[in-house]
Structure formats: C-alpha cells, structure tokens
Amino acid sequence: MKLNTIAVLGGGPGGLYAARLLKRSHPDADVTVYEQGKPDTTFGFGVGLASRTQRNLRAADAASLDGIVAASRAHEMSMRVGDAEVRLAHGELLAIGRATLLSVLQTYAREAGVNLRFGERHCVADLDGADLIVAADGISSATRTALADDFGPEIIEGDGLYLWCGTDFALPRAVFTPVTTEHGTFVAHAYPYADDRSTFLIETDEQTWRRAGFDVSTKETPNGESDQVSLDYLQEAFADALGGHHLIGNRTKWTRFRTIRCRSWHTGNVVLLGDAAHTAHYSIGSGTKLAMEDAIALDESILAAGDLDEGLTAYEAKRRPAVEHLQAIAERSMAWWDAFPERLSLPVEQLMVAYMTRAGKVTVERFAESAPQVANPGLSAFAGVPTADVPSPAAVTEWILDQPLVFGEHRFACRTAPDALRTTAGTTLVDVSVRPWSDEATALINDLPSAAVYWLTGSDEREVTLDRLDVGERIRRASGAIVVAEVPSGFRADAAGALASERVDLVAFTG
Ligand SMILES: Cc1cc2nc3c(=O)[nH]c(=O)nc-3n(C[C@H](O)[C@H](O)[C@H](O)COP(=O)(O)OP(=O)(O)OC[C@H]3O[C@@H](n4cnc5c(N)ncnc54)[C@H](O)[C@@H]3O)c2cc1C
Image (cartoon, rainbow, N blue to C red; front, side, top):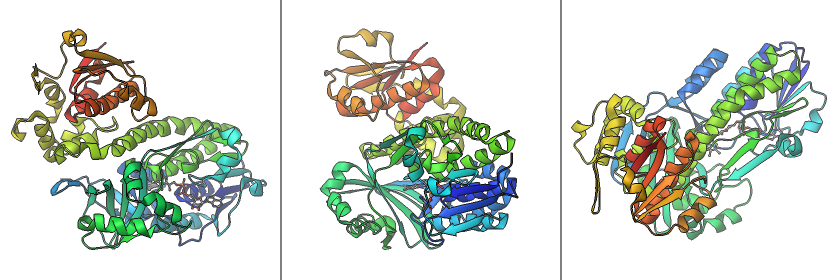
C-alpha cells in the first residue's frame, strides 16, 4: 500500500514512536508529527517502564530501545509502613523522565526522516489532505471528542484523587508508603528516575482531600500552575520519605484518573493510538508501553494490509485483546490502591503479598518463587507460623488452603468451608454480581442483614470470581463476620491469593 503523507497528531511517546516506525516502513512518505508543546517542556515527571515492554520494543526497533534504556535508571521496589520496610529486588524495573524519553524518541524520529513541528496545535480537519492521520493526542484527545459518534468513547472517573509531583533527589529505591495526618491517609508511589530526580505520585480519598482543604486549593489554582498549598502540606507530611528534600510541581494539581475505552479506534483515514484510545491506571505503569505497542501493531498491520481500512481494522483487532486485558488488571489495581489505607493493620510482608496478587496477574506461587525473602514472612504472618514452616513455592497454594482458621468460637480445620456451613443458621447467602468498587456494591454491602457468616455465590467466570473475592474483602471489613467465597475449582491459585491477603476467610470450591 502506498502512503504519501502521514500526519501524526501529538508528540508524546505513542506519536513519536509511531512516526519513526511508519517512516521506516514507508520511506517515501512525508511523515510529520504536530505537537502543540515545545520540545523541552512537558507535563509529568518520570514514568516506569516494565521489562516486557523492553522485549517488545527490542523486537520492533532495537536502536531506539537502546537509547531509552541508556537514559533510564533501574530501581528496586519497597513498601514502607511506619518503621517497617520490605524490599523487593526486582531487577526488571526501569524509570525515565518523561522529558528525557521524549527527547530520545524525537532524536530517533528525526533520524528516520520524520518532520517534527512543535508549537502547532491542530485538529483532524486541518490535516485532511493526509493519507493517514494518527491521532496520538493523549488522554484528552480532541480527535476522540470531535469524532465521538464514530469512536464511541466511554470515560470513567476513579473515586480517589492523585497528584503527580517530583522531588530533587534520587530515592535509593522505589517506595510505596502511606502517611496518616489529622485529615486522613495519603499514599506515595515514588521512584527515582534520574541522579537528581524522583517521581512522587501521591493519592488520597475524596473525604481526606476535602478535610485537608484541597478541594479549595484545587479550585483556586489557575490552569497551568501547581497547587502549592497541597505541595507544602505533603512535603511536611512526607518529610521522612523526602529526607528534607522538596516536592516539585509541574502544572501539578489533584486529578481523578480517567479510564478511557472506545467502541472503535478508527474511522476513515483517522486512527486513535495510545491514551487517546484507551488508558490504564498508572499503578500498573503501563500507559507508555501500551502507546508504544500500539505503534508497533499499527505499523505492522498497515504494512501487511492491501488497503488502509484493512490495515486499521487489523491493528484494532490485534491490539484490543491485550489492551482490554491490561485495562481489567488496571481497574482492579486502582480499586486496590483506593482501599489501601484499610489494610494498614496487615504486617508489611503480608501487605506485599496482597499487593502482588491484587489484580489476579501474579499468583502467590509465582511471587514466592521470585521473592521468597518477602513472600515467606508474609505467608508466615498469614498462617501464624515460623517462616521456616512455609513450604517451597510449588506447594504454597495447597499449604495456604490447608491452614486452619480460628475465628471467635468457630474452628475450621482448613480454609475450605464445610458444606454444612452454607445452610447453618446465621449464614447469609449473598449473590454477588456487581463490580467491587461500584455504587451497587456499596449499596449491597450497606443493605446486608447482620449475620455471622456471609457466603458469596455467583457466576464462575474468572473476572466475576475475582470480583467476588474483592467484594468479599469489603464485606469482611465492613461486617467483621466470616466471609466465604465460592470459587470454581480451576482457580485454586486465585483462592489462595485471596486467603493469604485476607480478602476472604474461607473458600468453597465449585464445579
Ligand atoms: C500520574 C500518571 C503517572 C503515569 N505513570 C506512568 C508510568 O509509570 N509508566 C507508564 O508507562 N505510563 C505512565 N503513565 C501514562 C503515560 O504517561 C501515558 O500513558 C503515555 O504518555 C501515553 O502516551 P501518548 O503518546 O498516547 O499520549 P501523551 O503522552 O499524553 O502525548 C500526547 C501529546 O499530544 C499533544 N497534543 C494533544 N492534543 C494536541 C493537538 N490537538 N495538537 C498537537 N498536539 C497535541 C500533547 O501535548 C502531548 O504531548 C502515567 C500517567 C499519569 C497520569
């Protein structure tokens, strides 16, 4: 297929990377990136890049990946609650300043022959003469809005609020750490990305945000400026983690995360890419990866197709399953973080088990294999036994299920609920068919009759099962009663993860 002109709207990672790949595949085409900002000014601080990204990027374009890795910084991970800290030697985590990443990608785009035009804000109508318009214009995509009838966007705002800021030193490692002030709990996700910089992303719930007066400071901060009132407050609250350093803003304001989904990603010669098409909560650190992987799929699909429509259809078909899978994980992760302050009574190692298994992506077994020094103390805290009694990773799933439970006067020999408990007086059956973080779930929990045991039933699809386990955690916390969740027998690992993380007390296998 011959493409003479390709217009890329947006010089973020998705747009720049797509422009380079497309120019290499269509050397005769005029490929231009239109970016409204200036080359050296951008929003945000460092972003995390996971290792899988690197494998995919290496296969597509090893040179630009080498450039990105050379400008990145590797870090380990840790979680710190009060004085207790656990460290996770990960070996795969990288972070890079957003401005640095863009500068590397600009260099490689230019090297391939792409024209970069900065300070130019355009809309699709301006670019009508192009054979292909790649709309990589970010989460607030004007293209998506202008062509909303074709793209069918759905935008869901998260409950919590976050503030993206930085600090002027390199933390020794990434850290998740909560701080509780008189107004409530704030949680920092922080990691180093340069010798003199770390990202500090801070979250809180709406009530805490209001009690601290940040609804007012948010309203009073003009667009394009940083909310200095919040930065000063948080700098004091996180003084320990900051070691006396400052929090730095860059158009930093409290925001609610927006999850974007679109019914379609292409119409005519216009195609959405990256955040314009879909977003996934930052706690899984995948937005950049998704945008760049979109670019790879777009380039490959167009190259293999007979005409543009076939290429764009193939791109969407190729990317949708992976994107939707990550969005499901991200949604669960976002909800887990929203409820994080409620888990602070767990020992930090057990909290780490809960964190790793929060989205149904990592099993306890896999976590125990990769980080026994953290997983084993976490599991020993769950079972109330010495760490030495925790078995090898291959045996942990069954070991967790075999642990006894003493709950008030109730004694259970293992974590599989006896059938008779389902029909015992005092047990209430609850059919769970709601998303765990939805208003419907809140209503369901508020309307539950009081009971000694809640036995959760529902359909046996995996996502619904994970939802049931997450709703179980909310019921467990709200009621203080014993919570049993039905789990299809094929999902023993999910059951073990939920038990070890104290989402539910017992499980009942079905099917
Ligand atoms: C708080 C936070 C933390 C994050 N942390 C991570 C992380 O750790 N790891 C990770 O991988 N991802 C992270 N992300 C997500 C990541 O930043 C995005 O997913 C990624 O930047 C998407 O790339 P993109 O190219 O699609 O869009 P963007 O990076 O948003 O780029 C869009 C570009 O288009 C330009 N533009 C918009 N409209 C126009 C127009 N009309 N004309 C010209 N130019 C226009 C904008 O100026 C912008 O430069 C985070 C996001 C947030 C909000």
